[in-house]
Length: 219
Image 1 (cartoon, rainbow, N blue to C red):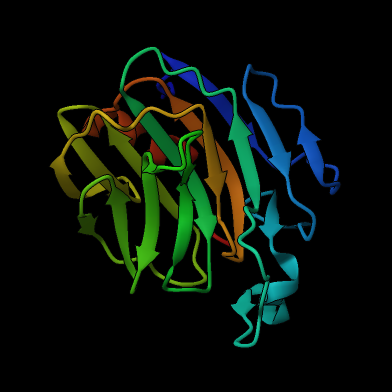
Image 2 (image 1 turned 180 degrees about the horizontal axis):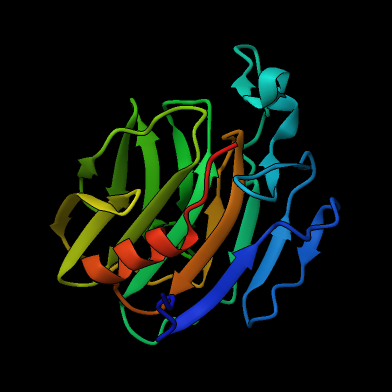
């Protein structure tokens, strides 16, 4: 079963990460920068990266967020740069695990040169449900401390969310999805095994095939 490859911007895995913060070689045009306070951890069948690692207790190999954890200024677990979107269409697919029912998965917001705030495509967990922006696309049930396959795919016509190969939410598209950088897991302790980015939307069959091809028994 072949993985969808058309318009693939990058396929990032952390199984061979050397445990050091800073740039990560991806073998693609994408740049990845990993923040300090990251560590190697067990993935589904190999190794993964633990972000904001001091925020986890690792008893029973199941990370738990500490109630008194404080990171101060907002900090991404890792950044992906060099996202070359030829059109206003993007798909982000990732395998991750988190002990929190609320937290940012990825996105990009800030202020432009004129001091005006902006937001591009984003995905988060809010009260155990996935939520995508722009707009208020929300659905699915995120299970804590279990590896989950999450996909956001969108263009000017529609934004859709998939969880473990199943479509769980959709809503109107947006012309403001364009970005060349994404921040992942801002102040959100989590483990991540892989990230795939496409410069197009993926259909339900592609996403199901991607999930079926990559899934493995959870540890």
